[in-house]
Image (cartoon, rainbow, N blue to C red; front, side):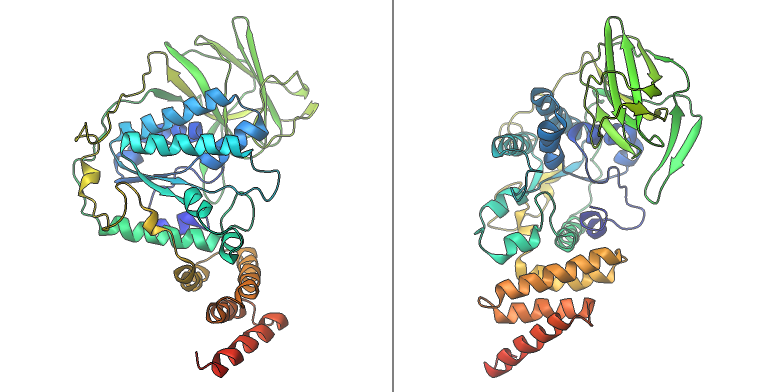
Length: 417
């Protein structure tokens, strides 16, 4: 995402609250942790369907709880009072990394249902790609693996979203509607960590720490340990044991009670893991203490706002009603921002002008080359255009140069160039 959608949407100084691999509950944590930045924003662009489906199927989280977290996310987004753009990304069954279609469809359908309920804007890439002929080069070219769209495609989409947002009249009435159902708690700071994107003040669990939040239940934790770490959460009669990786990551806590918690690091021989964690291969020996960034609690009296359909509740999304939706598009749908194949190919050059990693450029050259070959019997002009960009990225590529000259010769012969 960092060299794709966010690169197209964000300028220097824009708020980037979560970066890839974000579930619904992690997005809630970001909203609550960054309330000041949220208050200063006009738009929130959100996505979580891919990692929600992944967490249900591969991590092993309880599906019913995860689906409730999706509902809580949309409720929290509505509470902010901001213009919301929800994106549903496609998941293709190229490999076993994708959850079964039943899980994917249930997750995506809930996102669509809630976008309609709360009057949010929706970019439904999953539906868009399902409507395309799977044999077309564009489906595999633009989505080269099961879970990710081509970064330059997402960059072009981000540029389109940014242009659309900037064309809208600003509004002064985008104020918070309701207080949050969630509470973010940070422990005393005894260390810090950072990278090129994030900085965190952390609490290293060197001894048992008691945490008590009246009338609230622990539902998530953000950690950034130095290596594999293991957390023991103890309440009266309940123990939760989870392992965490060395990455800055957010994990759901699914089985704690709303009472005082005792938190401690387990170093040495691992205890019996009671809950799975994202991107962690449970190991028998643990060498690092847990470093906690913050804890996410949900209030016991929390309620989902009962929002009537917009035609019954005209005030549900007053700011959004001023947006200029082009004629012919369904209300609340922003699918017209999804790049067409031809327009996208023209945007690749702009994407490559950005400071993207060289490995991204190499992969892009490969995708362009392969797409051009697949397309050469359908649209020779577009094949030439794609191969020409591939040649700009990889000028010493012999095959690319050969095919470029071949396409050019055919276009000249047919007087199309």
